[in-house]
Amino acid sequence: MEWGNYSTYADFVLLGLFSNTRFPWLLFALILLVFVISIASNTIMIILIHVDSRLHTPMYFLLSQLSLMDILYISTIVPKMLVDQVVGQRDITFAGCTAQHFLYLTLAGAEFFLLGLMSYDRYVAICNPLHYPALMSRKVCLLIVVAAWLGGSVDGFLLTPVTMQFPFCASQEINYFFCEVPALLKLSCIDTSAYETAMYVCCIMMLLIPFSVISASYTRILITVYGMSEAEGRRKAVATCSSHMVVVSLFYGAATYTYVLPHSYHTPEQDKAVSAFYTILTPMLNPLIYSLRNKDVTGVLQKAL
Image (cartoon, rainbow, N blue to C red; front, side, top):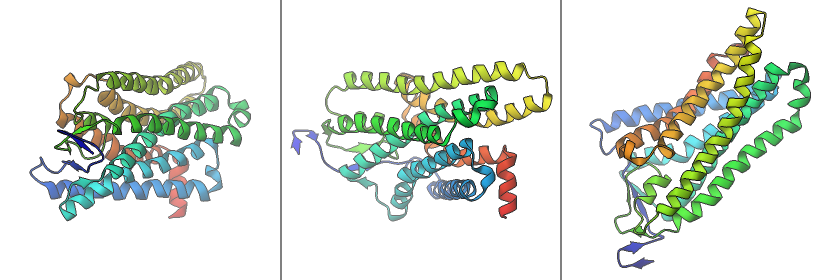
């Protein structure tokens, strides 16, 4: 439908990552390589956790869910971007943009909540090891996973219908490589400041709630580790938690920059670079960080090979 210069339910044009680079096919090859490594490493992680009984613990069950989210997360964005570059098109239908927008928000939100709840698992393992089997039973693990997926789904169901109901300007050109909220709102022909404020508050809450759980858990962990008399126990505790903290820092840092930092502090090109980092690189880095710093995973992988 169109009213003057307003239009809705029309196709969009994704300007993408390749349009402003001097070597688009080199960037294409790098992104393809990252995508393949990400899918392969996360799939291997899931298979190893599933088939080896030594990894049948709550921590690795949650890690397998993180790997599943990363596979779906990167698959929502990268395949279309690569195919568009090969066939020389940039169009995305309104339905396709809506679906991509919803899946991106749901998976990103689910990963936020899961990373926050995973810190509780580390807290129980280090601060209450004798009660760990009871506090992190199979039922509790399933509740954590369901809560993470539901939290992400609520984010997708709340923001997607509102974002996509705005009338968009006739150009329909999204200066981005996927249908992300800030890039879509720039196309709106009406004032979206009230919605942007509400979305800003929503994003703050989505970051604040998991971050509060992480902060509280790791404060208790640091106090417990500081009080440990054995150097070996202290080393194992730090090694176990450091991988999780690295992943949390990468994911939360990039999201804070994109959604919390005022727009006046970053340019569209900087936005693209940061988004490419947490949508393309982070899903590849997560399994590598957890596996390379974890003797259980490396041991199982060596045995499988």
